[in-house]
Structure formats: structure tokens, C-alpha cells
Image (cartoon, rainbow, N blue to C red; front, top):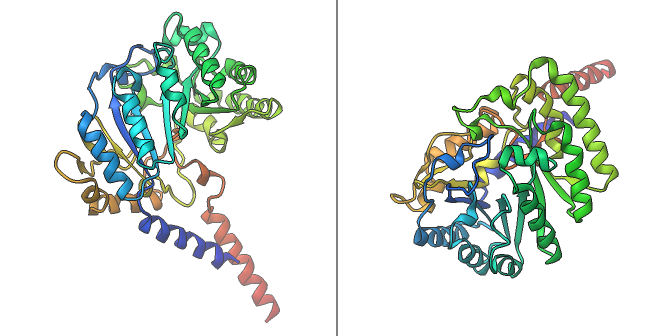
Length: 352
């Protein structure tokens, strides 16, 4: 039995190394119409990957096998050609398009009408708490606009969910996010903890983070939240990560799935300057799209090295919503495997 478990892990690694590209994330825009307190992405002000190159990247990604497209940015709808890009991606065969928005720009003009035509779109609207909490973090009047957008998205039967950040400012009001989801008939919530990388080095992290002595309290609140969401029939997309949130927020412990993370073997991220990375937390560049084809970048030796690092649990670890969420509950604990092997060997010896 123990050897079967170990063989299963080796098989998983072989599959990951041989897997074709599954998803591509492209930074369309880093400008933003908001200046959220816990984020610094909006400060970069880069324009994103240029128009023509986005379309050719989508073509290249499809040829490599990609079926999922993730348009990224501080706020992707600050870019006028975003709707054309989304439509093009669906038209060439992307089966799932996953976007995140602050929800404040979508009620303008015919924007939601255009979104409603996309069958493969799933859009997460950021809401971090009730009006007073959300507006304190993101700006006056933002909560009402986000909720109005969510209501209209559901009215048009557009696949929508709520995305929230777990931090000192929001943790006590997260049950109200569950209530909001239930009221609006939004069935899914995505929760992820405050990330220093997203916040940026110039933020006063103490305003958002916790202390080691807070771990027990965080754990209690997260368990209560999970139970409350289940009671309200609201699915937490990042639920597999929740047991790791207390030590992460209180002591900075960054987990990696026990089998290793397969994300670098599935996706590629293209940043505004054209640099490609395996994930947001593995900083090494795989190459630049203005110098190499996507095929050359996907199959180069740097990429293979980073896949091996992640599979062997040597990446920095994270609890981002884009992480290898499904692996956190099904991973192999090496200590348990070796204890199991010892028991099997002992049982065999006792029968000899």
C-alpha cells in the first residue's frame, strides 16, 4: 500500500512534466481607477501587453493546448479593448475565461451587455466587507457600485462570484460577505489572505497583518466562517486553504502542497513588460514574449527547472487564490508514509 502511494506521487510528477499548457494569464493593464489601501499594483501604471501581441499570444497558447485564459491587471476594464480580447479568446476555443474586477466600471454603457454574450466567462467582483469596511479600504461609494454590478451580473445569468481578502480589517465581517452572497444568489466566494507581495514594500503591513498570539483566534473565526458558509449553502472556492490561513497570517508560515505544486506545469503568466513567469511567487523569468515565441518559452530548460522546484516543494509557498488549491487536501505526508512503511515491514516480520 505504501509503495502504491509513493508510485502515485512519481506518476503525478511524470504527468506534470509531460503536461501541455493548460492556462495562460496575461497582464492587460496595471492602471486602476481605485487606490486601494492594501494594494500597490495600481501604482505601477504600466499599460499592459500591447494589443496585437495579446491576440497572437492567445493563438500561440491555444496551439500549445491552453483552454483557460486569465486576463489580469489592477483593473482590466480600464482598458478599452478588453471586451474584444475576451470575445476573441472565446471565439478561438478557450473554454474558461476567469477575470477579477472591482466592479465599478461595468455598469457604464453597454459593458454588461457585452459580457452577457460570453458563455465561458466567470468574473469575481472584489468585496471585502460591509459598506463601511469596504469603502474604508477602497474608497467612498465603491461598495454600492460593486454590489450593483453583482446584482446586474446575476440578473443576466453571468457566472459571478465574490472575492475577498482576509486581513485584520476584514476578518470579523467576513460572515457578512456570506450573507451578501446569499442575498444576491451568488453561490461562490473566493477568500485569500493578505499578501505582502501584492501590498508592496511601502505599505504599513501591521495595519493589515496579525501577531503570533492571534493564531488561535483566527483559527476559531475561520472554522466558524466555514461552518456558516456551509449552513448558508455558499461554496468557498479556496476552502482547502483555510486551515493554513491562521499560521500564515499570524506567523508567516507559507505552505506548499505535500505532493508539490503543479501550477508551474499548468500555466504561464505574461507580465506587462513581456516577461513570463511560472507563477506570481517564483520570480525567475522564463523569457520575454518580445524576444521569444511562447512555444520556445514553454519548452525551455528554465521552465523545466522551475517545474522541478515546485514539484519537489522548493518554491516559496503561498495561499493565493490562483495557487494549486486542489492539492492541499490530497497531498502525501512523508512522515505518515514512512510510518506506514514501518508498520507494513513490522507486520511482515511478525508473520515470518
